[in-house]
Image (tube, rainbow over all chains, first blue to last red; front, side, top):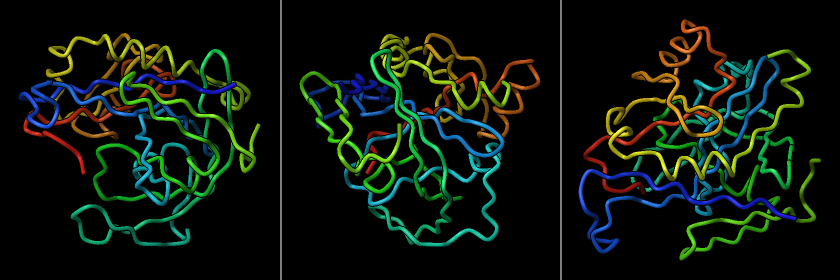
Length: 151
Length: 83
């Protein structure tokens, strides 16, 4: 069993030289639910093998009731950005298709820095799945591995 | 959404992505650089705004449950790539 998600083509404002003139970027986005003590938010998150941690915007923490005032802190670096402050919290994450439903808890970072997408990185998400990115088919298949802690 | 529903609710992410793939680009362009709440099946835009908080409030003002949506931030028109 596995979770299969088609990439989402994101329209761009002009033809893309790096994609032979195509005007959409296929992105490995998956609608992931983040559950906290007071609520749930489903958000398009980017499966990102280059991200060490899983990171969401702080605005989401507020609406799901995750308290960050005394949360453990960290700092991240992006491709060209100055250090990004992070605050960590334990949340429940969910991914589902008709074939499979997965729910697990994980420590994730929250940041006030602008994020185009939440980053679904190694810690928190990709460590628990074997991920097969099919470039030609524009889809990703996630299969839980032995580290997966959830249901 | 009740506490029990919240604890047990899953939505079909594969269907959402399939429908997002079909979403007309011209409709998405109307909301460039906006935060958007899509219906759980990815077929409709339920609310939009300058930021997440504004869009969340717009959902509630319209009598819609913000938890019954998938949230996204659509790229600005001058964005070519993300790094």
